Image (cartoon, rainbow, N blue to C red; front, top):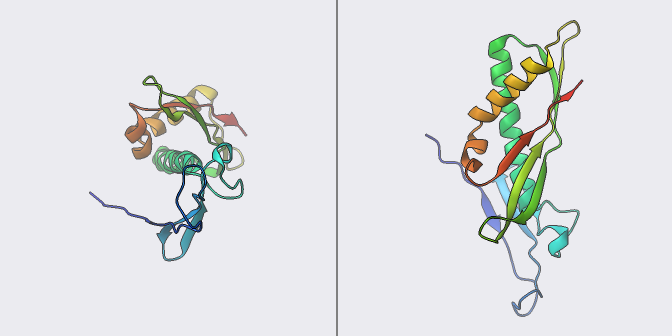
Length: 153
């Protein structure tokens, strides 16, 4: 299988590294054309204009789920015209009492070419299949509750 990597760069800007007295702002480089400014979540002192790791996790799950859904829809002959999702990572304490992403909610909205439609039941089955085959969802399966609430176009 594949090995996929990123580069992460952080540089201290304060004279001394002290608890709660330093910037966590850093850069993640996905490829030579894509780098993202990342910081802690705003509740933990991060810049709200920067991506945080919890959002990146929600993004990874949402993207993987969408790509899996599209592959399954194409095989089924579903003429998907557009796909929108608003993924939300929920922070809380896990069963061991540690802070973690405890739940990820996906809310995909799928639109089809004019004249094509599927029932709510068919959409639910396809979304569940996409979840079952998504690499990222499978990686989180034992750690995070994933809820898919498909919207209707």
